[in-house]
Length: 224
Image 1 (cartoon, rainbow, N blue to C red):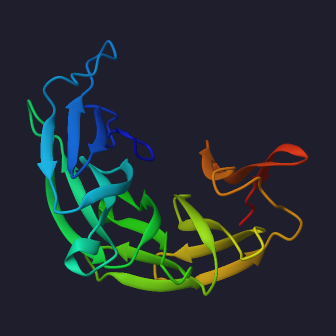
Image 2 (tube, helix red, strand yellow):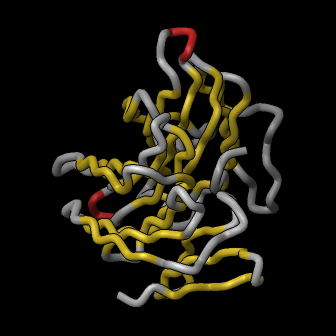
C-alpha cells in the first residue's frame, strides 16, 4: 500500500486504486459501487523492488512517484515520477522520468491544475530533506533542510507547505512558492509521536498540520 492509493482527476471520476507488489505497479479501476477489480489489474514492471509509493490527483490524470531498491545495480534507492493515465478499460503508467538516485520517505502533491505540475519531497541517505518541483516551465530542485526526516506536503492553491521533523524529532514547517522560494518556520514545542504521527491537510480553504503528540491530537492552522 502506498500513500493516497485512490487516484482521481479534477472531475473526481474515474477512480483508480494503485498499489505495488515486488517490482510491479498494479492499477485497477474502482466501480461506482466501490468494487475494485483486483483480479485483473493493469501491471507495470520496474527493475528493482518497489519500496515506497505516493500519489496525488492531477488535471485529467494522476501524479505518482515510486522508490525502488537498485542496490543490485550499484545504486541505493531510486525514485521515478510518473503520470497515471486513465485509459478507457485499463489505467496505464504514462510519461515518467527518474527524479533522483538517492531518495527515501517520498511524498508528493499536485500544483495548479493549468500547470499540470507536481512537487515531490523526500529524504536522502545522508538525512537531508529535498524537494523537486516538476513543471513545464522548468523543473526546480531545492534543499529544504540539511538534517531532517519524514517530510509531508500539500498545496494550498498558492504555494506548497512542507512539514518535516528536525534531528530532534521537533516539527518544522517550510513554504515553497511556485518560483521555488522557500521560507522556513520554527514550530518549537510541537513534537509528534514519530514520523507517521503528523500530516499536512487541506480543509476547505484552510491548510494545516495535524499531529498526535503526548498531549493528544492537535490541528495547527497555517495563516499566510
